[in-house]
Structure formats: structure tokens, C-alpha cells
Length: 296
Image: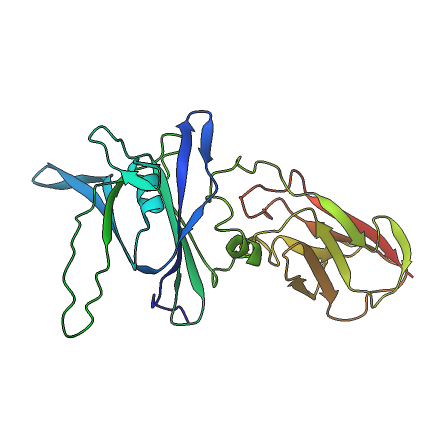
């Protein structure tokens, strides 16, 4: 079952160093320990055109995205990075002319089903925080600081947030493992279609055992939602579909077709992979792949 958000951890920031028609570049993400809360509030406007005494058309536009971060503490080094201040001689120096840099903010949130949601807000600036200090009383009163920022869409591609869930159909473990290595979308876009690396049996093979499971391995992970009976199927010499089951390896690179029963002997077959199959970036196979073989 889908889960609801119940946690927050692994808060990171990265400086946005380039955002133009040529692409986007970020610095290496830096972790902020002690994440407590992250509130994202996208502002949008909606307008309706009335004609012929009734609503005829409606349109909406995304405005400023507000982000409120609460942490156990924002160390002075983090404040300097996020607010454009300098540290000299071990002292944080705030200057009236300091300009906060554009940054990205990433984190992950635990869901009630035990899976994580990963998030990157892609472009924003933070405002000077309110500084509150309270004397210690007869009980502990945690004084957790808050940073508020305004985020916008990127100039390069108009994107403003990237998210993935561990329970999404096209999620692969490498997404979560590398989420905080670099900002999602901060590297060159993947425009290379997947290609076949190997197959069992090899294309053109003869004397293939009638009970053989057929497998094809691709150069990269594939989108699981694009792999089904319509995009992977086996035909016999008469171009009739042969019943079977489709399985995908854990790394999403290898597709195995297992016939429901032994294949006909001394018969030509074709295992077909259509261009409906894509990689995780949505790149389709450049052309249908056909694995041809003849049974023993």
C-alpha cells in the first residue's frame, strides 16, 4: 500500500553554479546534520475566462515556491554558504552587501510503508534568519533555528523539483544510492537509447533446447512500466504468439522470457523487443530488437 510521510533525514544543500540555455551545474552536495522539518509551499495562480455567460477556459501558472527549513542547528559554515557571508579568522562576518547564492536543497522522507521519498528543490535563495536566544529555565527548551527561502523554476528547463519514491514502479536502487552524490538533473541529460549487450541464446543460434529460457541484457536499466506482453513477445515460424512469462532482473537490465511449455522442435522463432521499451530517462530503443533462433 502507498505510505504517508512520517520522517525527514539527510538534509543537503548544493550551490547552483550555472543555469542557462547551455545547461545546469551544481557543486557537490553538503549534508546539514539534524534535519527537523521541511515545509514546501508552492504558490500558483488560477484564472478563468468567462464567455457566453459561463466559464469557457481556465489557466494556471506557478509562482514563487516557499521553503521553510527547521534543523537542530545551522552551523556558521552552513549559514555562510547559504546566505553569502564570509568566515575570516574563525569569525562569521555578515555584510549588508552580501548576496545569498542560488542553491538546491535535497532530503529524503520516510513513509509509513517503510519506503523513502527522495526530493531535490532545484533553485532558490534563503533570507536572513530571525535569531532568537532564550535563557535556560527549569526545564529544557530546545531552540531550533529556522531558515526561510524562496525557490523558482530553473532557466534551463523550467523544472523546480525532482522527486522519486522507493515504491515507484520505475525506481531502481541506484537512484537512492546516488541521490545525494550529485543534484538530480545537475548532470548532462541522458539522450542515449539502450542497446543490447548480450543474449541467450545468441542471435541466429540453431539447435536451441526446446525448454530454454530466453534472455536479453541491455546496456542500462530499463523502465519497468514499459516492459509487458505488448513490448516483449515470442513468435513462431507461422508468426503466432507463443505463451510465456516475462521477468526482469533486479538491476532492470536483463529481460527473460520463459515459454509456458516446451517449444516446437526444429522450428524458427523470433523474440521481439519493440521500441516501446525505454530506459529510465525515457529514451526508446532506436529500433526493434529481434532475437532469431531455431530449436533443436
